[in-house]
Length: 188
Image 1 (cartoon, rainbow, N blue to C red):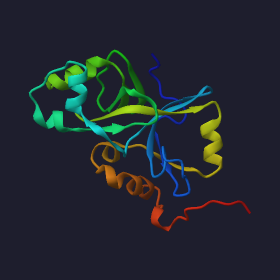
Image 2 (image 1 turned 180 degrees about the vertical axis):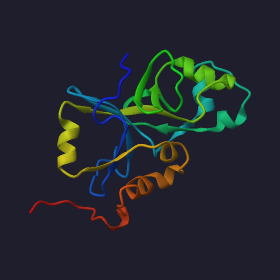
Image 3 (image 1 turned 180 degrees about the horizontal axis):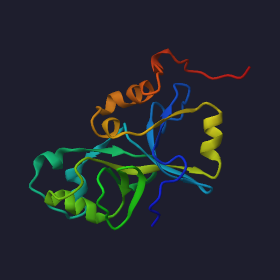
Image 4 (image 1 turned 90 degrees about the vertical axis):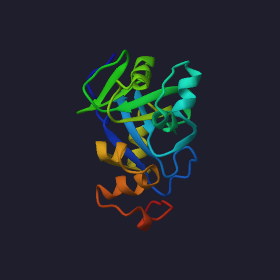
């Protein structure tokens, strides 16, 4: 288990309007890991068809907390859509916790969900099914092609800003109004 963040870890990728790939159009992806072998992230602004209650039932985890059960689960990306990723704050570690940045982690083990069901989990969480992946050099290439903007992740954006507002809010963190950005790209 890696505990230290990697070069682009903790950054949000914000898809520019010209990005037409349906998996990433208008996406905001939190980069969880980045090294010479590639990158892995979780899309944090797309709701899936599932709730946390559905995930608990599938994993045979019980809770009486109806608000928790009703929490939407995000569609974290096209890779491993059957696998859960819990992005959370706090210093507590779980069986498979990866540190993304200061007070920001991602955990993929069952124990974090069991703790949440007991009312003993992280204070602020985003639960997603699936992730996004980039091969060696792929993300760097996409960044040079102006496919993505990057901005440091922060707890307010990840845990408090409504899903439908995250794309614009993330870009606004660096002064970009995505409504004024062309939806095509070109080269001079």
